[in-house]
Image (cartoon, rainbow, N blue to C red; front, side, top):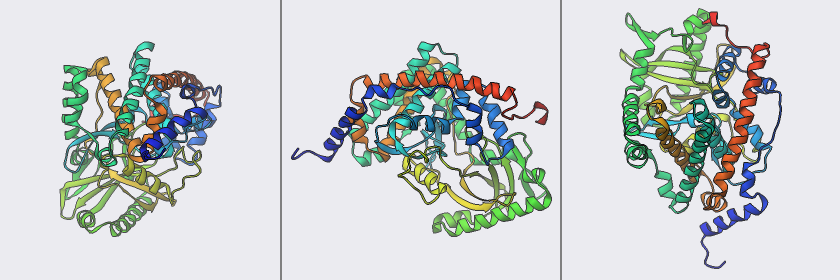
Length: 465
């Protein structure tokens, strides 16, 4: 193959993988019955029982919400299947609900993945299978017929495949700097969904620009004399002064403050200059999302010295392990914090400038590592109720494109393009997998709800709110 480029060789190596794993085999899945309650409890061991109960209650509401909260279980299921071996940095939880908009430092809004708790290196198809299955289950959850739900799954699969083929032809710099901002969303994607979709994209952008960190601070805090403190907004927000004894709350504040000061010392001078002007004044326990609701989180209130009218709210989220790391043993990181931050920086077009981590002892005395990020950063999602089937189609196309860009940035894009090919075989196999796995999720959800009814899995009582 004299004179053949390295990208051509990579494509050929991708095609060669079909001999070991034909593309139609991507559609195979057969696990059968399993102890869903035990698997859930094992995945949440050593986590806060109260938060685990909240997560269980959320997951019981529908098969799709159950799917959102079971990324670790799906990683275990996928690891039992043959894989391509074509590696990239996986999002790990590439469910459609993990895609949306967020603000860049220049204050544009881009569309991308937004949460990276499960990120890890692994076979590219694991992310794609989760996206396509999530598309099918999301359609079912929103009342789509079986045909319509499968169509959404097919759209997500084909969007990913079309995009990875496109990135195969681009230079690495072009891939690296590609992003989907508001203008592109309207010009390239939303207009194909009709006037209602364009209008909803514009409305969601307007809503997102109101969801600033400053808006969060004003909404979540109140002034008491010359001080500013968190409000009590159960079950989502509980000041540590209400949650803990006075002594324990003071110890926690001191521990966070020490961690914060150590964190500042590790920053470059520009960020250090900015953040050192703020001091920590309050903490509150924070409950957010479904998939991560059993993770310990705090909201940290910082104010510029002498000015309580311009507060900043940061989210401190406990960094746990990824469900993928036990199944990709050849990859190791110095810590889960390094795994998460490195993965997010590899995948996202422009990560949150506040993104980092610190260490401090929680109120129970246990030393933990915590991710730092802005609580809100113009994060948004589209309201599909206002866009109809055409709007959902546009959203799934955007998700597929964003996932392909993530894989093209961090993985073997030429080999992936060579493996998936240009005909419908890969897309059909991915939809077949989604069909089979969605049926498994529906069965698992039914078993999960039965376990709650039997008291095997705890959920909060209504009178506890």
